[in-house]
Length: 557
Picture (cartoon, rainbow, N blue to C red):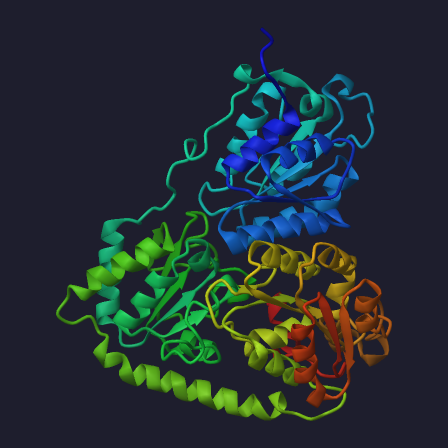
């Protein structure tokens, strides 16, 4: 009796299925097509894009939205090198995804086969795990191993190359190691050192002016409820960044945004959750030198890096915040009641900053003030709108104004500062959550990097609202050039054509409009929502207006 055989591509699909992956993002190549054949049999959707960078970014975006790892599949050589940016972005953003790249046949190793490159050597510095699959029997085993490695410490990407003859060969099913779903992984939810948690509870009990920064890992750990319980039980003002935005809804008495610098200067206790002391934090220098600083992170290597801390706790943000709240609530005096004045002090700073900027947000100026555009977007968002920012100066404006209404509804590239993520993130978000509205704000420079995949959104019927803040410039860079070299050299290498992107959307089968009057922004957004199509609202903003963060050049300090 003949034993049943299975190919490498079908073993990949079985391993993806065991991991809960229900879609791959890909651009085809002869090296990898057996994986498609396997995906068809396993009921895994194949979304084919127009550039491999988009496939990798979409896998990253899928992981952020679903909490499951994303997967991108690309061919060898230029297919894999095109995806490097997406992997690197996921690496800095702590996003779990697997990139599978093709490779020439093992039988042609070092002979100069089509698209042969040392992929593993190239990917090793920007992944948590990178390997070649050496035999067909090991395909599913090593795919599962790569997924496991994504979750070691803080999450991140893995890479596998699979030689063509390994992928196409068939082996007896009983000889292939096929890990069973749920049986090759340990829980990574660490509660942190109990003594450290008692110390944090003690610090909170004695603190007059604490504040907490809820970063990416609050969403990664799905720690929203624990974070909300913590800030309410202990009466701690909360600031949010990255995908931590939306943990508290706008208008919540503990939700603060515009008084962060003041709080970091005046606080006596600062708790940083799931955010490294990188450039976004001024490498830790923006925190009061007299405050007690506590850092909570999944990754031991992040804690206490770039500045001294008073207490570091490694583990799951949700478990640590819940345990701390419990430890503090058992005390006769946990300090919550006496912090009323501190919250009022911050709210006054917040209100003053908001009122100072409000005339700009309501400006009727033409060309349109970017503050007006991001104000209109913020007013337009619903509790079910996932907001994506993809750009430089225009997205810096939005970071001050746009407030997602729910947890997990904010997406930005993260600390790599990658332009071009928007289309891919919109694709992944809409594909994974068809019940959600997706709105992406692009700079015109960012959009033009990956904008052709607007057609992919049309082809797969993934409606979203795209908004382009169009100043025909890479304006964040332009400002720095003008400041450094003078206005006569301000426009070298950063000036784009005046493109009517609304027409581009129509050309590719979507909905498009051009907006030059600020009063037309909201009606255009409404029409895009009603269209039920992928859309681009091309808003012509004033190129001579810059975000405060751009003018301060904070990203370089």
